[in-house]
Image (tube, rainbow, N blue to C red):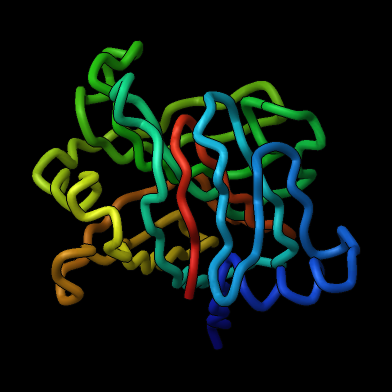
Length: 212
């Protein structure tokens, strides 16, 4: 029988870790992370890999269910993004590390002038395979400019729902549309038999908050 595990990246695992002053379940490698109420805030909108690791064993069929809210940044230079590393083994302990151990990064990014030609200008979703703390390879990039209004400063108070389902054995994945919960987009992570002990949240050039 397939095992389904729901992981909320931000509240239950973090609240006990922060109140106890321990890093067993949570560790912020870089950035300004703070748990307030039922939301985890990353307030630093500077450039760099601003990462927090959350202890969460993952194997088989996984459901990642959380929401994100824009809190600032990424306007002046028209570049910024946030994402989540899943199935993380050996998470990085290096500040501003490009990779995050062995993992898969799902990244939502806005870049008016991307360096890589494979990445569409504007809003895109990108998938990276992290091999170690310094190497990540682009698996795929998808044009999301049709959804750009969801992340505009005009709707900064809006909460963007994220529901991601991943079959760790096959690498198949599905993400729910933030505009219509009945619509799901299928893609492949480019990796099979995924296992990991951590989920890592990452931002670059913008401040966001995560909640249930």
